[in-house]
Image: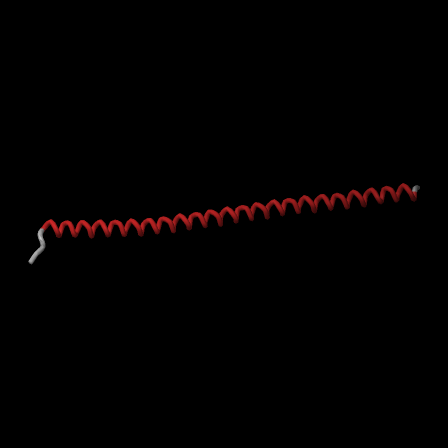
Amino acid sequence: MNPPESQTTSTRRRQSEVQFELAFEQEVVLDRRRQQLLRQRTATRTQSRRTARTESHGRARFAVLAIALTLTVVVVVWVMFEALALLIGP
């Protein structure tokens, strides 16, 4: 015996709704995973940029320090030789 037309339609509709809800839940789960991955990538990119910037600033500071020390040595040596020349005299 075949079920009435309205029961099969109702059953199909319920199955269709259940399938739709399952698909929606799966999409929500996938969307949350994508969002989490995006957050992680953003955090990683931010950290790497911060690290690169810190290293760049460190290199610049080291260069300035090296130049300052070199100039200090040159000036001190020049002043010492001038003082020695004045002490020994002509």
